[in-house]
Amino acid sequence: MNTLAPNVLAGKAALITGGGSGLGFAIADLFAQLGADVAIAGRSRDRLDTASASLRKHGHRVLPIVCDVRDPALVQHTVDTAIEQFERLDILVNNAAGNFLVRAEELSPGGWAAVRGIVLDGTFHCSRAVHEVMAEQGAGVILNIVATYADSAAPLVAHSGAAKAGVLSLTRTLAVEWAGAGIRVNAIAPGPVPTEGAGKALWASDEASESIRTSVPMGRFGTAEEVATLAAFLASDGAGYITGGLFPVDGGLSVGASLFDSRFAHLLRD
Image 1: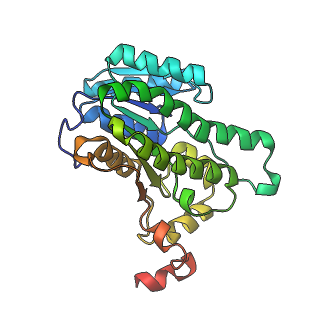
Image 2: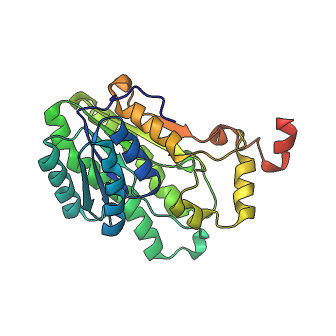
């Protein structure tokens, strides 16, 4: 349930990569509810069109753009198209991602390159492309969606972990370099949040799902809406003095994982 003031993002224009489904769509949907014009970018035209039809119910402008964030020219075209439509660009959410479980010694060069290209290279390309317009406006917000393991570790995701750790470093660097231009840059680290894509790729079995759930100190999965609510706050003027931060949305997993092993979860909750 949204707890932010109505129209807190009124008059703002946002671009969300990977906005056709999952976390990206949830963020786009809440931004539109809160008054923003929204552009969503992704590789599937059908998925973007379906998402756009849903977003338009909120009564604000919605722009679907087919884009592969690994291609700098396509990224620049996407940003230029959004600016042409909205005449400004206030918020960028770098959400496009790719992931799958694999042992590091079995990870192919192609698999490594694909995930790194989408997650790290794509975040850089998109951030660089919006810099000029945000600097000219004297204000802008960039939100990078990472993961709790970006600042720690996790097995079977060497490619994603390395890429998201790079995004976290980039977040902090850009926050410092671009603060003088009025651009704020923050990272959001969702913990286990079931979405259609993540569920199929990362915890396909009921046993895996239950093991993950019981490892969370709060004893439950998060929701896409909870991640979107944090994104909306960080994108709002109310977060105007916040930049360079990493914000977990993980039910305590990132701070309690070393102690809160699923084998002892029931003892600590009783």
